[in-house]
Length: 438
Image (cartoon, rainbow, N blue to C red; front, side, top):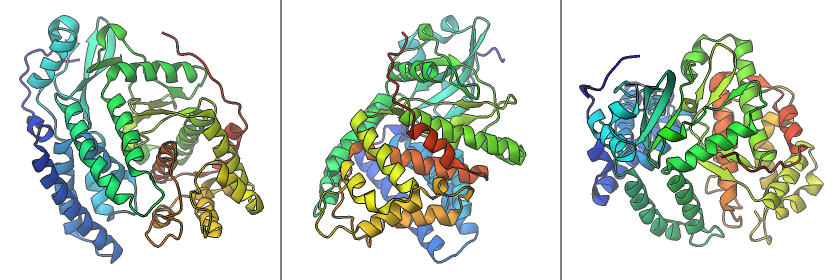
């Protein structure tokens, strides 16, 4: 590894993009919305061309510069095929690792403030980041003979995210009018998760928790934490080698990709139904694929733990849909609290929605296509007869993000399988509660 404490890298400093005033961020959001609307329109009328890539590049630059919540939205759009034109999705993929970072001098000040001068804390430190994410940058370094990855938080990002959410609260009240959805409660839920993500002490605890939970799994690696070199804004973990998602997908043979897909499905549903928690950020940039065949799962900043009663209601609902028991659906759905206004509720439409969402688990070999993902989004269209009659528990949004994010990743892997067998295994596995090791 390069011995480097000279701070001579020439990376542009995008810190001003993070610290923009609310008016500047609002202006940027307007530009982003305009570009996204033009791209969505082109997708709907099946127009393709260089403009898709150019608009995608412009969208990626703006989102990358804003960081925080805006960049996270871009990361979701980047791998969720069917929302925007294909060339745009490809242009946005760079957001999964980041393309515009903050200069090392600025980030070194964060390390010095939290742990001490870089050259005294680390034996070796490469100032060129390996990833520039939504909340911080990741560097490769060494502590003694131990190779590590060091995640350093952008200065001011927590305050920027808090400001973004304060404005979202007002908008959510307006958006919830004439519906049964508690918009402000959903925004508070998102804000809590984002605030936790800005606390690397919390993420270190989550890494240890998942590491303990999956210690017996031969196919999954969770990086270990160096507590002595971690703080609220600096997180030092074991360095885990492996190919990135797109490199692996392009090079791996079908059996290797199939096996990786099965590991990701098992990781998702074992986390949720056996351990009552999930890593709620399943985008391709958070996985590595070493030659051993294991899957390295990264980034445990956004974690959701679930109420056991709510989780039990979801177990029951999924079993009903998987078993095609339409006669038990209404009662199972009521247990989840999703039906706020039973009068006039279109249960047939809702049944069709859940059958579509769980189609990869209801059939022995299912191809997750772009059209399948697009059809899933169509159920959220204003023409849905139940939009004003449903209640959304804050926990629900994370299950949806996990499920549809997982489906999008499986689509990118190009795999098909009997996912229902894996899901059913964990629907029948009792909830395991354990105290994390300290």
